Image (cartoon, helix red, strand yellow):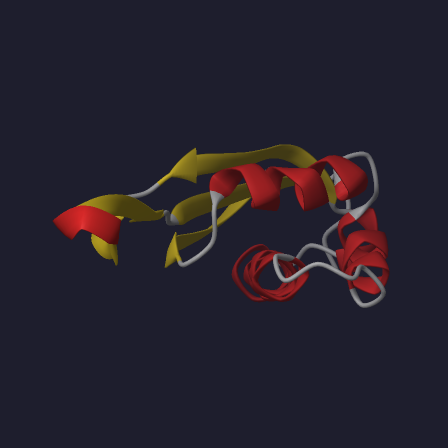
Length: 115
């Protein structure tokens, strides 16, 4: 059974979020949450909240045990970019791209794991 959770418009570059995702992709969902507590990256906090939300969805909506949940897919997509400008010498401007991310987590539980 698949359980989904999604976080949109996270004010962080998708490239930086993918670094953290690669570190936890092979773990179980609960191990990932425990590991993210000690990851020294800003992307760890919203990713941890999203995984905990997916675990809660599985438990409350489908009656799955949290210990048996594994990642089927973690997808980090690019959201809209906020375009800003910074004044530089000789009356010119340099662009500043403030990127956002959309993160989608799909967990799967093993068969026969209902309470």
